[in-house]
Length: 272
Image: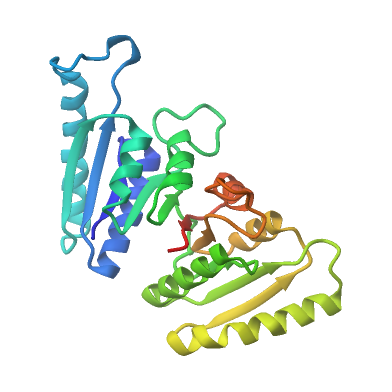
């Protein structure tokens, strides 16, 4: 299955393409650039009318340029492209059902000034059935940094842990497994939970002997703990729902806050 990238020509979309091409190079997956152009509200076509031809023509031009650059930078990765007139977030969620991964920039051209996360990225991360990577340009020197995953004992965290080990293995990167105990935890709680987490990682280390996994328990709330650790990570992996999730909530509060504020790309995974 291919990697689908939501592309609109914005700086965030370019970062998403670069990240997806690296992922395609590592995994052998093809990369599909998808430009979804919504109908203008004031000029929505009827069932027999033509789409907004100038908008689609512009989209095709942007895609052609992006494919050309991708071919020069990553000649070994198969890159395809497509422009469609449709609802953006809904189309990306639907395409995710046929993708191994959807990759998006944190903000597209339609982002509001001052907003840290675009509405399309937030919606797709919350509702897609496949993993979703939300990307911002990586900090210099971050390639050798660890993959970071947050765990809390939930089924969603177990899915995130499995994906984090797979990702760290593919990237030949170390892995930091973080459990936030809350600000009331004492030194004894931290030591006990770190040892328990280390024991729990034994089965994963057997499956991924090439991954160096470091268990870390901290006396902090989940969001500040993850954001602090993310400053030294190349990728953050979170589950779509944690232990505190409510029925019908597709992206937990922790994952939502991390998507908004993380200084590194975030991979959102779901329990299968």
